[in-house]
Amino acid sequence: MAFLAAPLGAQEEQPASADSAPADAVQETAQEPVQAPQSSLPPARVIGPSAPTFGQMTSASSGTSPAPAVHEVLFSRDGRFIATRGRIAVRLWSAASAREVFRIVVGNDPVSDMAFSPNGELLATINAGVVHVWSTRDGRELILSYGLNRNVEDAVFSPDGRFLATASWSEIHLWSTANGKEVDVLRNYAGSDGFILDMEFSSDGRTLATACRDRWIRLWDMTPPRKIRETLRPPFGG
Image 1 (cartoon, rainbow, N blue to C red):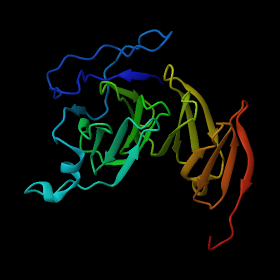
Image 2: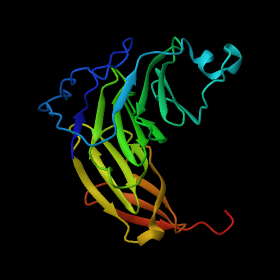
Image 3: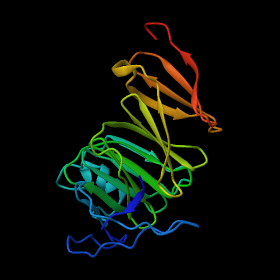
């Protein structure tokens, strides 16, 4: 599976148009351009700034209409951006100017999670179980073709930014952020009880911890061959 350039072509200050021509294929360092085939995913839109400032968007007292609900707020690690997640929209803001850079809408699909890459260049969102990856530079969409018929619950970047891990049921899929290819699939073979609810990399990227429905915490050694190194089970009641 590869990162694909979706037909967006939106710039920060220009709303996307339904008649816009497809954007050029994403250029990666020392990588061949990836061509964008026809996609059956819901149409994605990147919309130019609609709210002048972060304060006006989040404060109902700034206007006559209520402010949109904000379910999550996230800083990029370098402090350049703030991402806010509503029910179906993700807004990217400049932390320096407090102004909206662009707004992301994928059909009417609800947004359940989002994550910045360590360098702040990528923003991953989960819309109705499908992972989308966006460039924070110009709003271009990079789609992980994986996930269309699977339930992706979580997505997290490795500390060095080389990988994106996605959790689906009891599986972890590891993707290269350099070329979008799937690197590995990790399975815990615990069936439905092993459904992954959350995961996080250690600061050195050598371990991935997963919390599962069966109440076990699994620590994965991320040095090939990647496998479970240890399992932990907290006592009942916390």
